[in-house]
Length: 137
Image 1 (cartoon, rainbow, N blue to C red):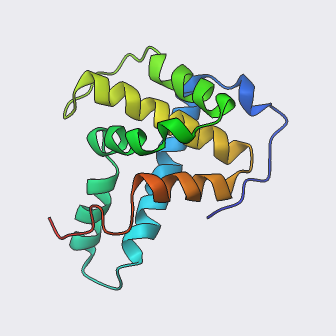
Image 2: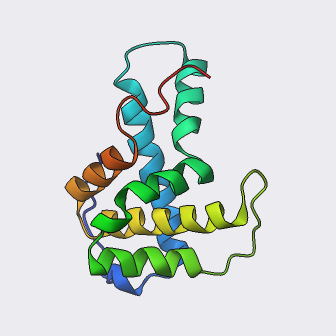
C-alpha cells in the first residue's frame, strides 16, 4: 500500500467527512489488492468482486467483525465518522449502513494519515476474509 509522507496538519484535526473522503480511496485500494490475489482475469470480473467489498452494506457487515477489536482512539474516530452529517443521501443503501460505512471510511482515512498501514491491512483482512465476496457476481 502507498505510504503517506505526512502533512503539517494533525490528522486528528481533519473533519470526519474529510477523513471518510480519503478512507474511501484507501478501502477501495485494499479491496482491489484483495481481488487481484485471485489472479489475472477479465476486468469486468475484477470490478464486480471489488464492488462486492466496497459498498455500504458490505462495510457495515464487516464492521461487526472488528468493532470489539477497535482501540478507544479508533472507536472515537469511527463514531465521529458515523455521526457526521452529510448533505448526500444514500441511493443504494440503508441510511444506517451508509452512516456505519462512513464511520469505517473515516477510520481508514485516519489510520492512513497516521501512517498505520499494518493496522489498515489487519482490519481489512478481518472485515473481509479471503473467501468473502470473491465469487463472480
